[in-house]
Length: 334
Ligand SMILES: C[S@@+](CC[C@H](N)C(=O)[O-])C[C@H]1O[C@@H](n2cnc3c(N)ncnc32)[C@H](O)[C@@H]1O
Image (cartoon, rainbow, N blue to C red; front, side, top):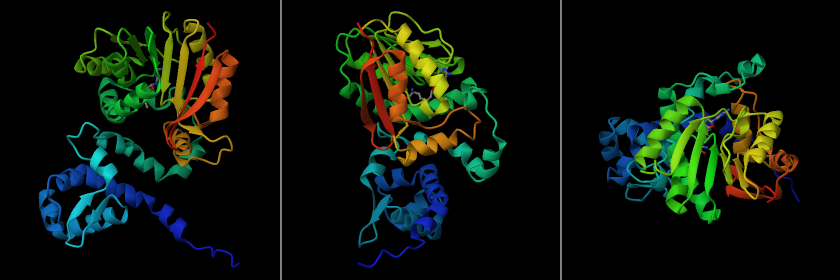
């Protein structure tokens, strides 16, 4: 049998992948998908609706069709792909535009990554070193736009019946605690995060009408101390920010703080154990070079190891968001 001929197709696509990012960001910024959903679904109508004219409307829609973000019918009308219709049309509850463009400020650094890698600098808190309330507000507008959906999924999959109190370490907008309060009668929760984020978390908590059950407090989770009286600990989407030594220490501190019989959920961007992907956790690890954090990607086996060495039992790993987030769960002996 003839061997498959090696060609340049894959390499050419990767070498210009940032063109696709640019096209997607432009479409989100201009409200293209929102306008298509509202009926501006031909080149001429769309070009007029978003102020780019017919020539650029054609260019952009050709690109978006090539990326399979929209489909074009024989009569020249465009329709959003199902994921675009759900997540990129403003006004939908599931709108995640802020999250999809969240990493835009690192755009320039990706273009000079070889220089960034040679700098070999590390700062303990990485990008979180110079957070202000304003930057935290913009940041968590983005995490909230994706985190509320993730939190709903978490509370559909994890039964917290009978649990009394959650601590959410690096809880950001408080999404996991807000949905917990809506889902589990009688449960209370505390969002622990850095001081500027606490201000923002309190705004989201108030906006969602759960301030009687959910609070937010300042805590650097690499130092503690952690609150007592919690029988659930959640830590979501902050895994690549720190190194193995930090995680070993943090997970041990969580173990000590939890009530006997309590449960811990580490939800993170985890690599397969052979470190051959998936691509998303690997890229989050590589991204950490840009803000000069001490972090990198961790494998599922490494994360299980952090829980084992802390003393957790009944440890399991469950796919949470395919190819992106894995949930490693353990129980403190009762
Ligand atoms: C990507 S966000 C995730 C937020 C939230 N867990 C979610 O899933 O929606 C990461 C969060 O970790 C917080 N964080 C990072 N390092 C921290 C530290 N040392 N102590 C407390 N919070 C930290 C950040 O401030 C940020 O709010």
